[in-house]
Every structure is written in C-alpha cells, then in structure tokens.
Image 1 (cartoon, rainbow, N blue to C red):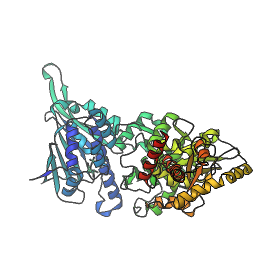
Image 2 (cartoon, protein in one colour):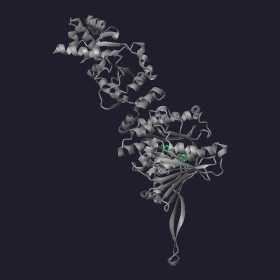
Image 3 (cartoon, rainbow, N blue to C red):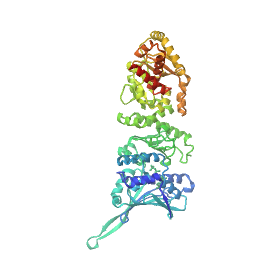
Image 4 (cartoon, rainbow, N blue to C red):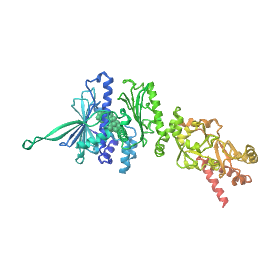
Length: 620
Ligand SMILES: Nc1ncnc2c1ncn2[C@@H]1O[C@H](COP(=O)(O)OP(=O)(O)OP(=O)(O)O)[C@@H](O)[C@H]1O
C-alpha cells in the first residue's frame, strides 16, 4: 500500500485542525454534507445530459450513519465519486487559490487564526477537529474500480483499491474519544437542521435505538435499526420569501461560504415574465482572500431548473462583483447549455444585467454602519466597476467613497455635492500615493482658504486611472486640482498686472532652472507656501498618463510648471537678491521643496541637501 505525504500547506492545516482552533467543531458535518451535495449536483447534471449516465431510478441522497459501538460516524452520497487520482489531487493537495496567502497569514494567535479559518473555509479538513482516523471510500461514476483514501491526519495518507457497488463517496470517521456527542441522534439532527436543512437532497439519518416490548416477564429490549429523513430537502432559493426567516438565509450562507461569518447583506429575487429566474445573492462581510488574484474562484453557482450547471463561470457577474456569493437558477436556459457558449447566451445576459442592478441597488440601500464595512472591503473593486461598467457607472458613483479635505472619514459624492457650489457644479480632487502628502499639498491651500472641499484620492494605483475618466456625476464635473487654475478672488486684470510686475523675477528663475520646468509663473493658489509645482494640463502626455499606467508602463514625464507665491516673504526678498549664486540656490530650493510637497523627488537630492545646509549656515 502506497504511503503519501500531504502537501506542506495541508500538513499545516491538519495541525491546526487537530489542535482545533476552531471553536465550532460541529461545522465538519456541514462541510461534508456540502461536499456530498456538490457531488450529487455534478452527477445529477450528467444523468440528465449524458446518455452514458442515464440511470434508471437514480435519485440523489446523503446518508449519515451513527455507530455507538464503533464510535464512528459515516457520511455517504451516491454522487459523482472520485477515482485514485481525484482522491490524491482533491484531498492530498489544495489547489485552491489563496491557500498560500492564507497560510502566510496565520500567526499562532489562536483567536485570530480561527477567524481566518472561518473566512478561508476549510472544507474536508475540518473533519480532523473530531476524527482520530478517516477513510474516504469512493467510486467515480462510469469507472469500475473503487479506492480508499485513509489518514489519521498526521501528515501521511494511503490510497488503495477496494470494492464498492455504487458510485459515490462514503466517509468513515472514527471519532476521538471526547467527541462522542456526534454519535447522539439529537445532536446530529440539530446540526443538520441548522446548516443543511435546505440542501436540495434528502439527508437520511441511520441510527440504532433500544426498544422495549411486552410487560412483566415478557418484557424484551431490542436494539433496532432506524432510519429517517432529517432535512427538508428543498433548495432554499426555491422557497417563497415569506416562508424564510433571516436565520434561514444566514445558515444557508454559512453552508455556501464554508465560513462562520454572517453576510453583510443578502437579496433574494424571483423574476417572472418573458424570462424566469431566481437569484439569491450574498455580500460577505469580509472580502474573499483571492479578491485581487487573477485566478480567483467565482462565487456564484448557476442552476437550470434546480439542476446545478457550473460554479466556475467568471461571466455570470461582471468581474468587479467577484466578491458576491450566491445562486442563479434559470427556468429558461436549456439544461445542456454548453458552458463555453454561456457568455453569448441572451437569456444569461439578461439575467446578468438584472442581477447587477439588484446587487448595486442592495448596496446603495445599506445603512451607514454596513456601508462603512462595505467601503473598507470593496471600495477598490467599485472603482474598477466605474472604469469598466458604463451602463452602471452613475449607480457605482453613488456607492464609491473618498477621503475629503474637509470631512472626517469617507464621503459619498452625493454628500460632496450637497455641500458644494451648485452653480459651478464641480467636484475637485487630488490624486497621490500618500494621504499626508496630499493633505499638506500647497495646491490645497487656496481651496482651504476658499472653504472648498477637495476629494483626497490616495489609492494612487487605482485612482490615477479611474478618476480622470469619470468625467461627471449628476452633471457635476470632476476637476483635478493639479491641472486647473485655483479658485481665487482676483480678477483677470489684477492677475495680469501681478504677472507683469514679477516677470523679471519669473524669467530669471526660469533661466536658472532651464529645462527642468516648462514655465515659471506667479501663483494665486498659494497662501502659506512660497512655491508649488503643477502638471501642465495642456501637454498631450498628461491625458495619456492614465493609459500608460493602465498598461503597466512607466508614466512618461509630464513637464512641470513652477508657481511662486508673490505674497510670500521669501519671494519678496528673492526679488532683491543680487548675489548670483545665492539666487541660483534659492531658485532650485523653490523647485525642489515644491516637488517634495507633492511627493515627487528632487532631480539631484544631494545638491538639494547641500544647498539647504549652506543656506542654513548662512542664516546662523
Ligand atoms: N463527497 C465527495 N464526492 C466527490 N468529491 C468530493 C467529495 N468531497 C470532496 N470532494 C472533492 O474534494 C475537493 C476538496 O474538498 P474540500 O471540501 O476540501 O474543498 P472544496 O469543497 O473544494 O472547497 P470549499 O470547501 O471551500 O468549497 C472538492 O472540491 C471535491 O472535488
């Protein structure tokens, strides 16, 4: 018999499970039933679409057997089953994306780790919280040979051929001494009812009971085998909303998410008419671990008339809604709809469109406390949606939140608008990587002085691409404050006059800085700082910067314009400096310190430091 080593990550996971960081041991039943139900779904589909698997009288069921004498619990299904390779691939390794990240996040802090496990969903391995030894006996539908996968959860497993009549899987669990509660009929029934009541297949509990018959001398006690169905066996989403309680939805969510968290919100809709379908969607409280992985696992399952079709179609919802979990069940799609052609299917396109509207509607309706959680977890993917989903852009703009120069926390665009100038209808923003740098940017000074709110977009990677293409929201135009004239109270004539007055000075600074700046001009946007740099919005490259960033290429250098504050002491004095080398040093310092305030680097950091030191010495 071949012995195999578990993949390293599984070894770690098993250790965690056997030491049971997870307070909720009963969930192993939920996980095994959920796997059985998936296996039944898969066979059900085959039996309806593939001649080879059309069996007379097949009806999927899950059985649970309790054996007190043997101290064991067995869970079986007559589903798709696994062959030798499947057993090793599915149970001996974890292919699931995000596993590595999950393992890396483990800290050894039991409380934190158990939360993480809840989020990760441990599936089959949860059995090791209660098992001393596990045998998985399985026969794949359409194949002759059955196999047994055995392990005691200590790092090794064995696989050997065995005999088994029916296709499907039987999991024999030898319970640890102190886990006898799971041999109790009532306890198991309670757990099944709690989590798996609405699994679509019947769950049959087999157990023994002492039965006494007769009276007096005739009295006889016998152990009798009993068998009863302990769940409702109706898919939850097929039931009318009026029959379902919040806790039903929550427990069902735990089953499909394999976690212990409650969802942030859920929405259940039955659509009737030309196209009939039911959707049940959940928004998790915590973003899935693989949210930013290209190989993320989609969270929505497609059913056709209650027959499972796929859980691996990334097109059921737009990619930016990849955090949504749930079910789409269509009455109109053909059962044998080709999975490759799903994308082009008009019925499905219609369902998708409707689903997106419903999901976004539900998000918009979240109360402020839940919205805060939502923003924390999903703001970034909502921005992705703004960029990619033109149909729903306006709704998504109603959901996205930004930091603000005048308000605490995250603000909505609607709130911004309610505080803004309804004549001008402009939404001001500044993008950069560092919130602190942005908040202290000299470019903000004039806005602060004029009491104008500016959105602080500090998720540069995303915002620098998304913000410039927003255009407008509710007819309010987005304006990047680094590329527009600042608000001020001076008239054009006044500005011209000051510019003229300072022209000799700005010309002289430009001469010193040469090609480092495109232009030096007088600023009306500054109140406290002597200078600032802005990007030249008229440069064709400025408009293309977002495109470069999106293609993952380095941004082309956009020429900078140096603006100086004519009211500032330094500028007033600089106008009178006659010492040429001092004038040069001060000109460079004006530019380099302005760059630093915007999070940009001086061209020659050494020279900058040297100039500052030499000036400081002079000042002493
Ligand atoms: N009863 C079963 N019948 C057939 N295949 C099974 C059965 N139980 C498990 N498997 C296979 O083993 C794989 C691993 O199961 P496991 O519960 O660890 O993870 P999962 O179900 O894929 O993930 P998650 O539990 O997070 O959904 C399953 O994807 C499935 O292919």
